[in-house]
Image (cartoon, rainbow over all chains, first blue to last red; front, side, top):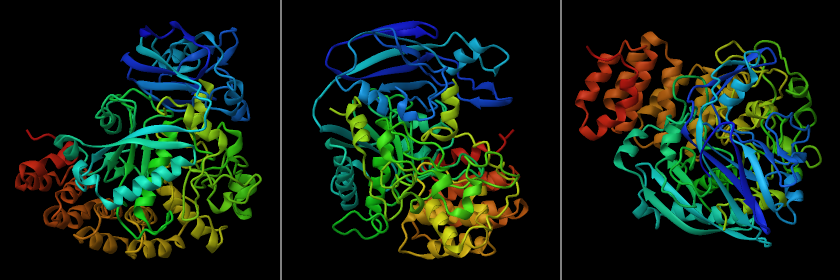
Length: 417
Length: 197
């Protein structure tokens, strides 16, 4: 579609028999300043993220409106676009229960359209009453639209690349490393539950300068296009693969009190088929690889390679369009109806329920909201969901499952063929 | 815009996560969750150790209170536990500020056989629990004595941060002693130091 300016309306054609589409926007000359909105009387500052607004279907009805209030049940929305995606972002559908149902016979054929936009452009359009700082209506993006034929089958294949940003293992040794082979076997088992097989698996060494730069870990709490995480992603080679960067540590950028994580994905979903962008990969702490003892079945308490596989599969799930089935506060859920929900006010220990975010959004100073655990969320009914790979955490009892609808979303992603 | 902002508060794994509106500022005093039973505290510790891409902030560890300390210490000491789990437990202990933390972190940071992720956590934890005036005394042995240049480089960075640049002479002296390859690990540490005139 070429380079377009925010505010431009772009049309694209969807052929009959299409199963999914993806709008990928890459910054050409976009505002890099953070954007500060005035929201409910408070300033909220966010990175300038790309987002297509007013996506319209061939019959003229609105498929997605970024300025509309979301429905109380996110599964009823036709599209979810809930990440912060500075510089590069992908809008992929279907990714909700409603769109899976609407696209059951294929994506409606004909001419679709959307308006190119980003937060800076939205801020500028809102005016000073809602936009404190960072408004700009001049950013340009390179726009691509990918369509994937409806497959009408329940399986697919994903090619996977591992970039080894570590001194612990090389590409040459990885192919015969017992821990790595166990990790791959477990990853294939987990993705097999979504009907997805691993295709070509490739290991890459990164340049020495990159290993040196990230030798003490990669900063995981800064995700601007010039920050470490995004710059690491640009090391990926252009290809349609699921890219993972294996590192020795994912750490805070400073003594900020923000905790470490063991995985992080560049964006939800990732810009499939576009390697080398600032969001072209997920990062996984691979320190557990080869540690512990592994038996014949997956063991998330004692087998480090299984743990690395689980984290890898989870981050790859984000790349392929899946959100956390239940977020940590038990008050927000993914846009998929069959992943269960774990509602804090019903599932947390009784003594902790008064502090659930939904019950008590303004806790007294010094108090923190309750977070739901695996043990809270494996009871079925409204206390369900920890059995899924995309639950916000895991423990030794986690099952790493995909729901039927999650599996459909994954298989519809352009990275699966 | 509305949908993005709401979602960004809670659902944006892999991206910047603004603090939820009901959470306390990071360094504010927190109220311990005394209403939790011992089993609840254990469950919460295990939950935090199993977090994948949701960072557990220092004040979230703090509200679990002193009952979490022995649980975390047991995990840190156990060689049956996986490295990332031990590293997270160290982070929790550092946030809770347990009395034994400084000694424990010093020992672990010095152990050459420990996985590097565990040593990294120990170095960061040691910097966190050490008063700024004592940072040089606590971190200098690691800066100069660790055999792994990555651990030395992280100690240099933490020393520069904790001393607010006042110990950068130690950092620069160590960089001078490093091989050319190892010097490349010090870019963050030197970035925390004022430029030499």
